[in-house]
Length: 519
Ligand code: XMP
Image 1: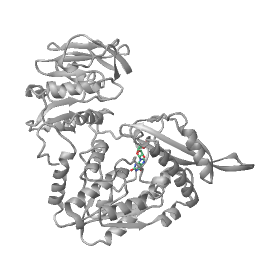
Image 2: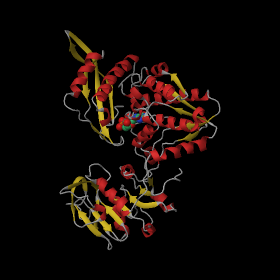
Image 3: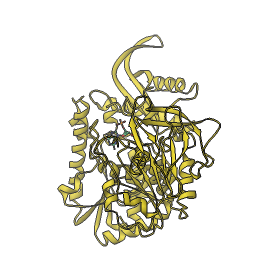
Image 4: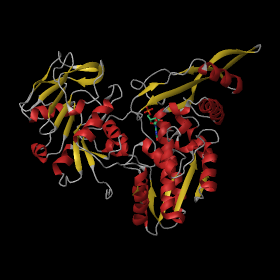
């Protein structure tokens, strides 16, 4: 990555917390450029000229053991302000000679009320008459290091915010990056602008020309292919590359037959006619249906869809001569996840399908222009490239599509039924201004038939499940609370208009313990 037009930045040292990405989000939301690095990266880091502040994340390590994750002490001599969050605070306390204990009495999980003890630059405008913060810790600082002061406390932990204002080193035991901490944004605002004194404003849009120039330089006169699905990421990649190299880009759209009603055709038309891109539409639905006919195991379905997709994409790509590059919509969170600081891979819950793995076989070089960005930033970039709202605001959609939203075996009839129900649901969400309030919504077809009555006849049909969740990044999610009457209306519309469904249910589970998709 080249950051030649970045003038100031914040380094976020990731000790393996589940929410480190959110720290980067908060910092970037305030218009400040940040990078997430591992403690090992920090040890090797040499040029701190642009670094105006360092944030140490939380993590599973504990300084109460002999071996723990740490940073070189000399970092504190660089006069760069430092903010430690949770484990970050404990590490600071330890390195400055404080005492940390693991104790049942002091541990806190979830909401806690924080009380002000002393004025600090870090907490300007932060405290309200009653301020709730979000905690997740077993260890706590029990003895303040010499040069530090206690700024705030909670019922269980006396040293919830600490500071060494002379050296500009700060620590907070709670997580200001999660939305459950009221006013957490103010902590970041104070750290960035009052303590680090950041002036440089960074925005996604300001990166657009740099990205386009970099693509031009890398690709020169060579050919690029990309798999276009009509999701935000692949659409923005296609538009960016097209801006940079025009004729030498070919987009391949593989229609698996497992997409939403009319969506694929709409995307094809938009890219072909509006943006004048070189797009090849491959209708492969028959072969997908054939291979999936009697498969009901979720993992088997995912594997079949994923590998068939790659096979078809490869075959089409080979028809284009002299291709050197494959463009992919890899995002920043994907990069962070693949280089976790603890080295521990989160256990595989589902095998995700995307086009990764292609270049190894096909001998193509990868271009991943979105790898510095979060999903919301990609949407902003898309808007600035003139991407139509219907695509730039589109909810995430899984690679295996409706294949994992029809539980049990898949038939052409079931796909048709689900497409109709889903179409009614999504249309109503749009018409009632609910679509943009929801992170992801979809309809699924359950493999159970129940008895119903329509007119004078008994029916025996499928059940449709509706899902709608709010989320920050898909890692955790809560179900969406619809305004009164909305679900009644949808249920009615679906049962009355979609032959094959006689019952509608709404999924009210959160992630965890459930997942967003059903398979
Ligand atoms: P889960 O069901 O794991 O989903 O809570 C989290 C997010 O990931 C999406 N998802 C996928 N995306 N290929 C994708 O590109 C996949 O195979 C896949 N499976 C799940 C899901 O829609 C949700 O946004």
